[in-house]
Image (cartoon, rainbow, N blue to C red):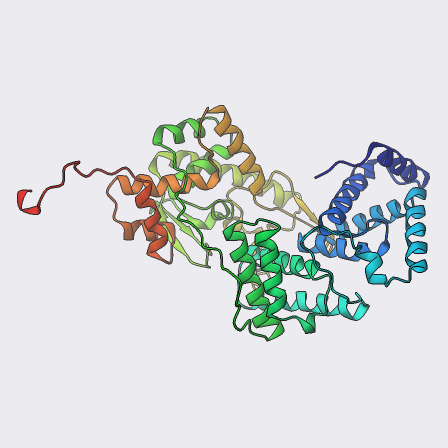
Amino acid sequence: MRQIDPQLLKNYRTLLIQHKINKNKHSYFTKWLRYYLDFCRKYEFKREVETSLPYFIEKLKSKNQTRFQQEQAEHAVRMYLLLPAVREVRKFKADTAKSSQVSENQALYPAQAAPGIQHIDAHCTPEVAQGWATALKMLANEIKLRHYSPKTLKSYRQWVIKFRTHLEFKNVETLGPKDVKQFLTHLAVEQKCSASSQNLAFNALLFFFRHVLGKEFGKMDGVVRAKRRPYIPVVLSKNEVARVLEKLAPPFGLVGKLLYGCGLRLSECLKLRIKNFNFDMGVLTVHDGKGKKDRTVPLPERILPQLQEQLNRVHDQHQIDLAEGYDGVFMFDRIEKKYKNAGKEFIWQWFFPARVLTYVPETGESRRHHLHESHVQRAIKKAVGKAGLTKKATAHTFRHSYATHLLEANYDIRTIQELLGHSDIRTTMIYTHTARSKTAKEAKSPLDF
């Protein structure tokens, strides 16, 4: 993300002081301005015109920003639009557009756009904008109706927004396979997207056309579906795993031990609640894993004392939260409406709770979330560097190492499939390429065994 021009930043802060904006909010306002300028550059919006603002706010919604953050961002951008230099640029371009009799759409999307974008002679009228807004809302409803994960919703929505921006807000009712072909070609040729990104864009648009627009792609002649090459994941040795775990400070060290000791995905680990642990049976139950599947895995006996200590810490924190009158932990679906006090019950508390409470402006509640994924990822990245590894290891590398080491310990592939929660055995088979072979070098006949 590019930094704001120093002179522009100086003028902007002066304007904030003139309008008596609280100095404590200046850093937030400059942050939103930086995001807005980067948004306009990335999606080729004119940053000096107010018509770009609604699309910026819509982008913030897709990023799950709260209503308070959206309003603060809008305030920050409107302050930017009040800058004399910005107003002069806006006036100059408006006069130029009027003198050359160009349309409002041409003024908003100039001809010197990035290569590979073909402009469509269509006006971004309020009706067209409303049509896209309705379509995006229907997309969210269709995904939620099928109980797809929030990450799927976020990904599909982003690809549809990129598709819309590429077509310059063409009327959603006139979209067809030709537009999809043009967009996918643009991704492959101009953007040089990877095979996985191109296929994800294809799946997102297929879902959008089929379930939102009620249309079928038909024959997509001329569009080459990128084929993914076989991927061999990075795997750490047992010694390397130990070196990384040793460099992780609490609570990240225990998170890493569960990732490796139970083969969990990072999201599965951080979403663990107290009720998921059965210490008497030595079993950990993973609810709503990838694909909404449940599974059980054995708890590592070596870390049982550490898990019990973490349980005690969560219990102490829970008692403090109750005494201070917090509103409970964040719940899911309709569980909270069905069981109104579930969020305050100990069994529903996060096993790895966030350090501070989260304020919800819409309801005025203070709730506790689980540890954020980015904090764990950052800690693991630092630990890998301190351990002196020559491999690019992430949180998911622990899961790859778990499966590989089980395979090297002569666990059968079906058992590993169940422990990992894979729907297809072919997904698990990739670890046959990461495990060391223990076969004899010289081929022999079974009669000679």
